[in-house]
Figure 1: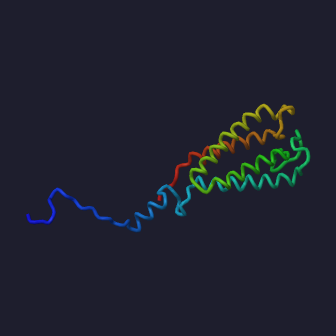
Figure 2: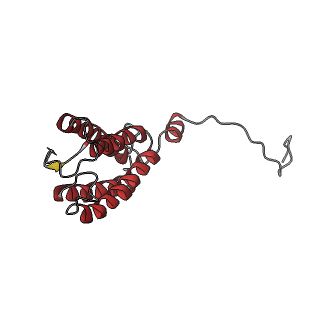
Figure 3: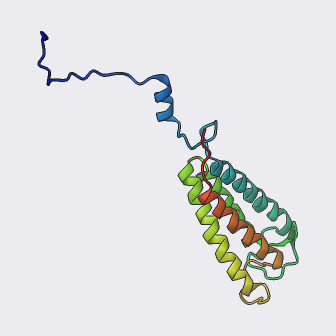
Length: 163
């Protein structure tokens, strides 16, 4: 064996990544075709819905008496007051801010799960007690809060789709 290098020496050379390996390094394999995860799109839709509800709520309630109780003012069957509208608006804007990344969307889902889970439990006591019902909630609100908490759980734990 006549070689210029000893047999025990290996020479490494740089090999640029092929287009398929470069693409897979750039785009997570657990995303949709556009590079976004399903939880991101769900966070976007929920965020938009809450912003819309918050804004529409102010057309119903106006801005007077922020913590009015038993307002008899409804948006889609849910009793609201201006403070309730602010909560919807803030949660919607949070969703719009966090949907851009998969981890942000999952964080948003966790916030919805914990926040609306707590709102559901609070509502069980507050609906029939005007002294503590600061958000003017009714029974329909309680069911909506439970559904929102479960939606947040889905956003937080939704498995990403494989390509």
